Image (cartoon, rainbow, N blue to C red; front, side):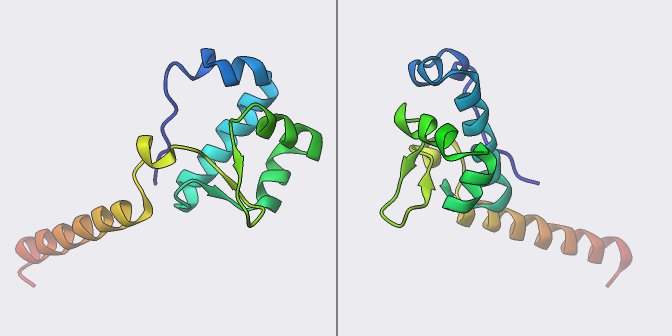
Length: 111
């Protein structure tokens, strides 16, 4: 399981205040998507539209700057890597845990 971090001042950030609750919810769900699928802050355009429910709501999130559109058309969480670990870091930690688990099992069971 992975986590995506949402700053405790998020609720009063000017972009969130300008965007309103709908935009804040869309952003939070997009952030959660990035954490779950280790996208390093990238959200495919069809996924973002599905999360938002309609183009108008998605445009509202983009208009206030909570998300940015990439040249590919996908969306991106600005500064994602500043607050969240990236895919490579998470996968390296998972591998370390797996190796420690194997060593522990070998020591315990004599394998």
